[in-house]
Length: 550
Image 1: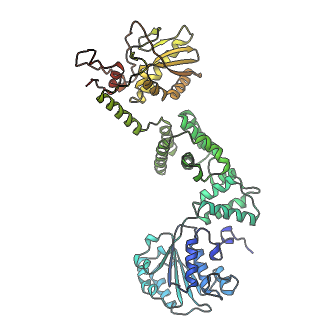
Image 2: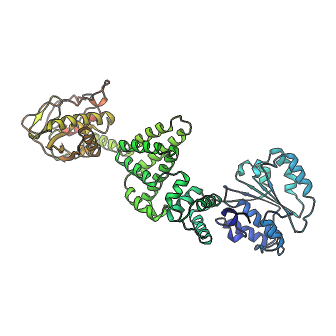
């Protein structure tokens, strides 16, 4: 006997064996038990979810020697012939190749003849949506008022293409995708019967790749069983499907969180050189980030293996939900563009670099600006720990031409770290002109050849600098070639003389908006009653305005 693939070998033979379509099975069983058999049925739904199987089971139930019955015996002559698609009274017609008006006319002539050795003559028309409009029109009268011994069962994956006049003449049943749990249990049962073993990781990949189609899952499983000599593992299935190892996807995810663009570009280069599909890499990354996002919100609703939960526990805190949404939108956009791009690798690299940038929630920034405006209008000022102006406060130390005030304390290499600090501030403020203003009011102190202290005079600027702490450390490492510890501190600095501080000029041909010197001009006479605190003046400078107490 020739080999039968798993999808055919384990095809359900009665209503109770159909997986995931209990709402349809029970309805049909009740209709048969109460002798309420319709003359036309329409089964619609995704591929591989049981439409044709259900049609054959219904044909068995109607033509069984013991029937019509909700539980066909499966051993009588009619049941056996229908199971083999050889029943002379059950005709399976391919709608794609018999879609013309001539074929429908022939069908109309044949329905007049009664069944040979069964109660019903049943027509199963698969892919019914491919029948032409003229052929459907020719079928209307027969479909609405067929002979008493005829039953039509139409199956389609695209119900919207069926004319409304046909839909109104049929009982319609909508098949749904089969759940992950149901497919997993079915595969495990088949594994026990067939004598093969599959681990949780491989099972998860098979179920995910099936997309809710039992036939797709069994076809992939059949391929894996045929080519695997032992236990089916997750790594083997990934190689079979051309998926990337999960270690690479996890590594890229961590690099995105750290903003490590060098590691990201290196990984993309290795993927390309090893022959992996760049488009598949983007899909795998999208699916992984989606699962991380869902796990961070509610671990109970994720569909992952026990082994992967350890990884997800680590990565669930890497991103906020808003950043997850942004990255998913970018990946969806790049996947759409990569299909038509002549260099998909370049396009993906650009989007990955964009995804690695620090993300600022626009809503939070708008709320902070609104609070500042409200405080300025109401006169309800925030008083920091020190009343000294961050611009005028300084360490007793070196004040060079650039305006960077620092104390190297005679440490060897201190001057180099100060020069690097100026470059870092220039680079960050050019890239983030609105959110990096606090860096322009910092004071740098060289603690050792491998550590620096960035000092501010109020909590507001401390939080502003802290957002860039990780980026500052990476820039120091890139520019100096070594690891530099960066500490941020709030100190009350008092000096006798206030040195003049110049703005940090961004080194570019076109002057950055950050490099502009905003000057707040007083349009009222200073007095004890009308004086505006210096830190309020600094806030006003950020928005290019002037502070006035009402």
